[in-house]
Image (cartoon, rainbow, N blue to C red; front, side, top):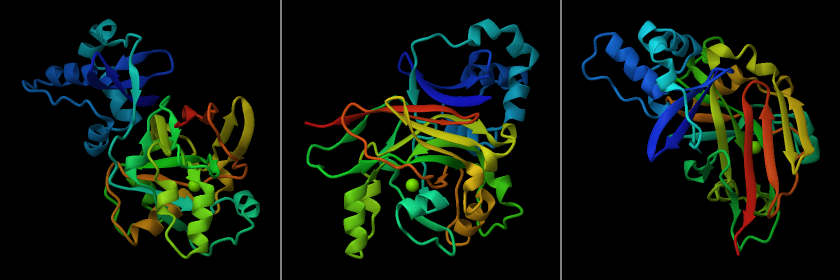
Length: 300
Ligand code: MG
């Protein structure tokens, strides 16, 4: 089961891909609440709201869709074609990324393996939806790279949580392309400066297309990741190769800052990073999470 945000006839909504069909979950939830006797149903039009309500789970969505009132109106909630893909979470308070979390990627950077998880921020202002262009500014003439990554969507506030309980704070999973202005990043590191700007240019954080609820993902620690540029495979790995596991990462970060519902943690990229340029089509697939597609456009 995959959840997504969409815009249709200027109206936002949440969609659900059941594998067989696409349904408008916003409408289904409205019908469900009326079936429960609610006179003023809450309009849940953004996935962020669903996450904050604690309803971003396969169990809850299945419960709503199997309600007899909803089943009776199934035809009226089936999605029509012609919607646009929106960001699954439009305004996360935090996008936190892991650096150097795959051995192969550390080798290709000729870098050292960190002793502890190495994390940094990427600006939420950099987000781009599925099928939106990655725009390289006209003034930027140095190397820009793709980085395919599995991302965790936080579902419940996490402050100083243990590894044992960390997964209880996960709402689901999505795909992030941690696009990086590589030369700028290397120059900033060499100068002893933060590398925030090289990670945070507008549109340098494609994310989506779906959130797949955590209770429907068997083992997030063992998923296949593939990235292609114009159909040619550049990155191919499994999340079982992560140096620091998802529970370890959540526990570690939550010792420093409180994670909020809707926060995104991107778990790091495997080896195979390469330069992207004008016109390239970047497709990232993660097992069970769908395919995130973005074209690169160089501003003139
Ligand atoms: Mg990265």
